Amino acid sequence: MALQLAGKHIVLGLSGGIACYKAAELTRELAKAGATVQVVMTAGAEAFITAVTLQALSNRPVYTSQWDAREANNMAHINLSREADAILIAPASADFMAKLVHGRADDLLSLMCLARPMERVPLLVAPAMNREMWSHPATQRNVAQLVADGVSVLGPGAGDQACGEVGDGRMLEPEALRDELIAFFQPKLLAGQRVLITAGPTFEAIDPVRGITNHSSGKMGFAIARAAQEAGAEVTLVAGPVHLPTPRHVRLINVQSAQQMHDAVLPQAAAHDVFIATAAVADWRPVNTQTHKVKKDASGQVPAFEMTENPDILAAVASLPNRPYCVGFAAESHDLLHHTSEKRVRKNVPLLVGNIGPATFGQDTNALLLVDELGHRELPQADKLSLARELVREIAQRLHNANNDKT
Ligand code: C5P
Image (cartoon, rainbow, N blue to C red; front, side):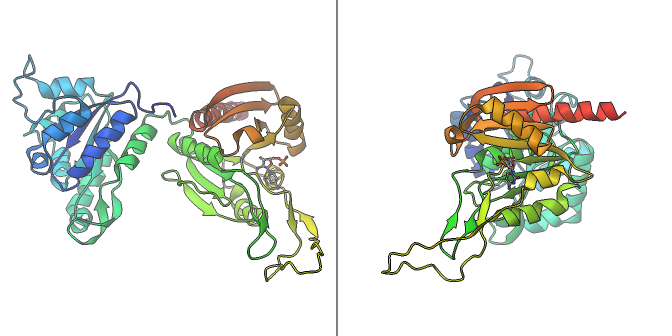
């Protein structure tokens, strides 16, 4: 996958807390994603982890003091904040957030946050503290004020705490913070939109141990869910049996069969602005699921299963009176443009996306062919997340045009 933070300069600020140990891994994750990372530490942070560790991982000297004589003008707070594409405070202690709220500036990190040009250098904080400290009204007041001041608050997560207690207040894991930052930089093309997506294969049970399914991995649908969420949409993902991590902030509904997928999708489809059907839904299912495993016996008799057709979820959503903007997928083996165009008309949807099924099932890359009433556009071979972001751009453009037509 492309380096998701290439060209981004991140100032990573550490305030004091045991979660400082995770800041080392976070520095590595950001650097691995292509960012340059400049670490700034408070005295409290230095009590938990050394600047040497973070210098080695970021490949840059760490700043710890507002009196740092290395800066020609002796204004580290100005120089550091002007260079940054974003400032991320991780961990952000309760005390440091309180300082931010009050505009205090008695150390380099708080001074730098106060001195940053607010309109072009966003500030993100990843709180990390004991659960009682997090839920204290003073902290909650401070968090609300930070949000009102335009600061993005990432997490915190819940779970085991270093103090032995369990609850809210854990700093998000380094990979999660990296993904939050990647998402933060994506254009908010679907802000306020509700997007419903189906993904993966379905599993049509024959008996308790066997069933009919296919090779869909769900990767394309999950990538689209992630891309739509990064673009600011509220995303619901209805997925058949897959083995994939759920993208952050996406509501996942797990199903097995086509009928279950249909029943999960239909009641909520009209409340969404966009429906994207990437699932490889089984066309048929056995009429009856056997209660017990069908046994092979000595007779050599092969069992016959009576099959029936599954409901077409996309066609059902597309025929709703108040339908969302519908996007279908076609997994073909040949004649992609012909089959995709034909399917678009047959399913009565404004946009159909063709791909070569055998070439993409289970892979991390794909190539897409977008077909609408005006013509077609190819999105050449790329990783699925890049393609998903491009598809989101295309959908956002069409939604925008449709809304303009209405006015
Ligand atoms: O019908 P066909 O499989 O050729 O069309 C594929 C498109 O229709 C995909 O978007 C797929 O998710 C959707 N579909 C569906 N329900 C079905 C079969 C396909 O939503 N039962």
